[in-house]
Image (cartoon, rainbow, N blue to C red; front, side, top):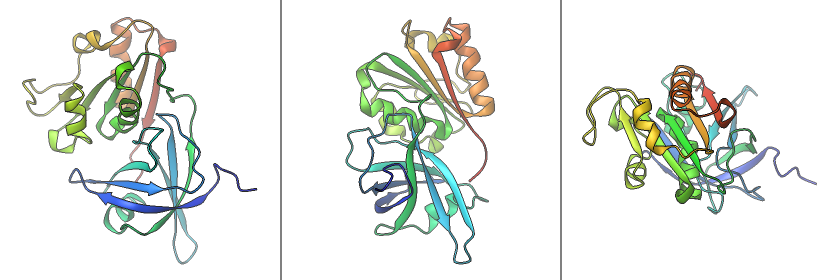
Length: 225
């Protein structure tokens, strides 16, 4: 019997380049296991000489979406992200495995706050699409043009902090505890995703507004591509 979470091939249904340095992949996954918002998938590439490279990508689609959506930030020296962004076209097949992860997963039934830095907003998009009534979100990015899912976040009323330029009437600068406080509902689980430095800073802001340590869940990522 085939392991429903084991390696399999998914068909690329569509690709889009919504920011200058990214690609969004919509995949048809055979016998797909229903994911929880916050989980991720691994994509594995195999060269003709047998060399393999694999990377993890957060799921952006809601659990009920019939297709799996992954957002890939293109890194200039990335082994996997450059191929996915520059080469892959609809009709291709990609080897994938998932969904993976339990600590950073949200079932949508309880209030939650998500804070994403850069491409760290991707799991927050899945949560927002799953149950926007129970979810508040804040996003931080250096420049507005690089914010993934900018239109969707804006339409949802997300707090968007652009650190290097004014945006939406907000002066350039990092997120503050004062800004996060109105988004937090006591008892809510807070999800933080981004670089190690961003995750550390955001976690400190949550502690400053009184969020218990046990209610803060952090997903850090590094520069691998």
